[in-house]
Image (tube, rainbow, N blue to C red; front, top):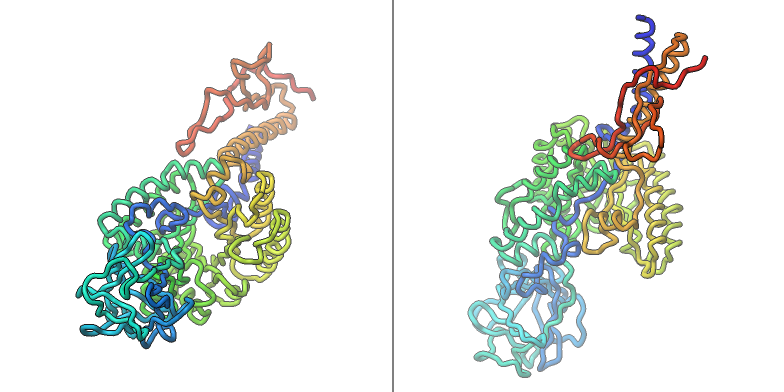
Amino acid sequence: MELVLSKWVFAFSLTWWATFSGAYSVEGLRGGSKVRGVNLGGWLVVEGWIKPSLFDGILNGDMLDGTEVQFKSVTLQKYVCAENGGGTGVAVNRDAASSWETFKLWRVSASEFQFRTSQGQFLTCEGEGCSISATANTSSAGKLFYIERNSNNRVHVKLTSGAYLQATIGNQLTADYPGKPGWDDNAATFEMTIVVNNLHGDYQLANGYGHSKAKEILKKHRNSFVTMEDFKFLYRHGINAVRIPVGWWIAFDPNPPAPYVGGSLEALDNAFSWAQAYNIKCIIDLHAAPGSQNGMEHSSSRDGTTGWPTSPDYISQTLDVIDFLASRYARHPALLGIELLNEPSAASVPLEVLVPYYKQGYQIVRKYSSTAYVIICQRIGNADPLELYQANIGSNNIVVDLHYYNLFDTFFVNMSSEDNIQYVYKSREAQLQALSSANGPLAFIGEWVNEWNVTNGSQKDYQNFGRAQLEVYGAASFGWAYWTLKNDRKHWDFEWNIRNNYLQFGNSPAKQIFNNVVLLGLSLLSSFCILYYSGHHKSCICWPSVKYPRKSKTKNPKYEIGRLVNPMNSPTIVNGIAIPMAEITTVEQSTCREATS
């Protein structure tokens, strides 16, 4: 009897190991060997193109921080120009407009602005009847200007003193127009052209609404854009990780520096709780650094400039943010890793600045966790994919994040659907193979999307494109994360792609659990049968055995060895989700099939 029991224990242990071993490859990740992730973009770091309606209530919403404008005198028919792009005088003497004739807005209120030149100086004016110059090197030294708009793009510009600017016959811009101008053709009237209005980030939203209204808007957005139901959806569809973009101001919650609005830290805490409930891991991604690392809205640049790499204070402050995040979440069971910086610009951030920052960031994370993955993002633009593999940033659990889009480059503009698919299979796959053989950090496709420049793609085309990316990016040693969970542009919207069958996934964790249970049951049955035959038992063991559902079409339901049926009325609850399981029953020996020797 003891021998039989020993055999059973051995068989059970072997079966359990064979069934469930290999479930962990990326350390700490359950439900798959690699990351199958989704980004929570546009949630805690605002990107207006993801949800444009966030900006609908801003007065003069086409004149946010960073908007680029040009002014043309209606009397001279000449453009206002900062000579040499800034640093000297301002004239009204250009027949055509280019960079010197373009000014970036720094918004103070719906009608108050400062003007910044292409070289970074601000327009200023000293004394009564002064001439405007572009000689102020800081915003505090620059002058504040009021803009009065007419419906036909005509504007008046005046100082806080009430003096209106005018274009003189001598092609100067002076603050001495007599009285209040009308909207006819006069020296104080200009035609304003909005050249670029593509920055719609946290800075533009908060500064555009003002603190009180922005707080109301963002609270509603953070409470509704991503919820626990979304984590349930992700779990059901096989996602085992989320990459969560955050801004540097999260470390100052609940009262971050102006114009930023508190509340993102509470939302991040919620995300960790929801992730833990559904066995999903979290990657915290520092998407926006002080001063901006790439000049884009998703790094919260005020006016499109990149100030982070040239400011030791900004870099030091960023390391403090990493320290804050690592100390707060290092011991949380849902943490998978921390990404030190998203998409630094190759044109603006030299490796001589980036690599030391990454090394210091790695050491900071290691103060609090020896196992959390430290993720370093590849520079965007013209950068060597192998450059970070040669940097020797850390000794363990280092991941390089690469972002693969068949977009944002003229190279992809005229590609057909098949061209795009073959590019993924050939060029992307070859690059990933090269990175895998580099004997360095793990490779992570931290952003990709089932969208392209093809304008007439069918659903089948999108399915094939998505399949190609899943196959190729699935070979990345760390895994991948789709950009993004929700988006007003449907092909960027992960949820829309799944629900409308444009992106096709394999088994969800719920199905995997059920399949594992079935496999385990059948394996156990096999073990019992082996023991039965080896021991020459005349009886048979009928576990697990199940009964057909009541509505079965079988006329004479019987109990049968190993027959697993999913009764509709017997779900098992796992993490709040009803998962159908087989009804396990024991039966009398007489109802079993006779075993033959």
